[in-house]
Length: 383
Image 1 (cartoon, rainbow, N blue to C red):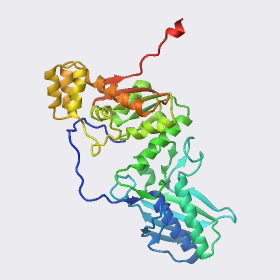
Image 2: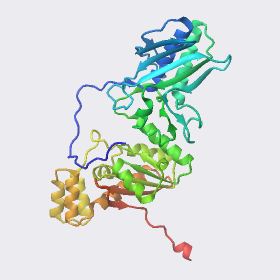
Image 3: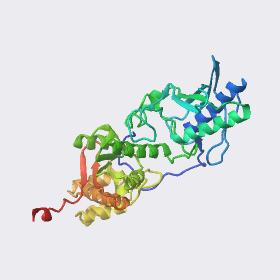
Image 4: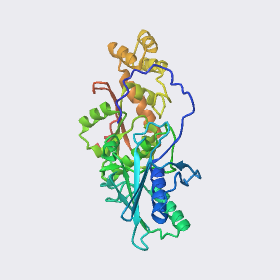
């Protein structure tokens, strides 16, 4: 999880230069390595480069970084290239070892060093299975079948996937919180990494919701960063399995919860991030949405600010400066932002039966604004 936005964003956005380069998922890399290893097992020769057929029709080529044979087993390795995406697995060495399996067994998957094992329900894999997601499994099965058809193999093989240093890399992911222990997950639906789509992050959010529901949590916390998460967790004492690393992807959390609801949701974040949500932005990244100081000035007026204070907020240099001006004047701007952010969240949930709370957290971890559901009406119960 990244640190919370320090609320120092000015208005305006980031500029991009050259077109961003796409990359390949760990699932695509594992498919390439499995293809090469199985072909070498059958023929004695490693194909290099290795051509992989992806679900969308692309046929990329992968260079081999490792070729190894030993006692009826063959290992091939591919270095992951995530393109221009900020992916923690960029540059990781994906290793696949293949050997003959029992006749008629098909493809059996195993977790090698650096690939995790599923220990909690709620994921698309059974507890005890290696953390190799369904789409990469299909890609590898299809690749094994093609190699078997071309080189008269049985297609009955054991495929062991590992990632060099994967257990250490996994500490920078949400795998532990999802109950995936011992290493990374082998991920990817299309095989392609689209820069800054952060598809792996969004997939982890969805898996986090699935795990929370499957383990019986009725209350989850979705936070933009470490500071706000710690503040919300301290308030409610929820376990890690009830925490969602939302980051900038408020829309991903809310849209998935709309289809897979829990009883209660606490959204926690810094003032700048939540002011964007309050303005209707569901992607809170600075390259895709900006703090609107004019809107914050209007919110300050709605919260009771004088015209002079509202004008000062409008002319603030950053979101943090705007908040400080409001606080100095005794104007509950953070509460107003929390209320507006909650309204956007409720609208995005599209009628899902979820109680929504918003907490605005400062850089020291103090809750400086909040908005909760209206208290339940008790008149009928008291009649």
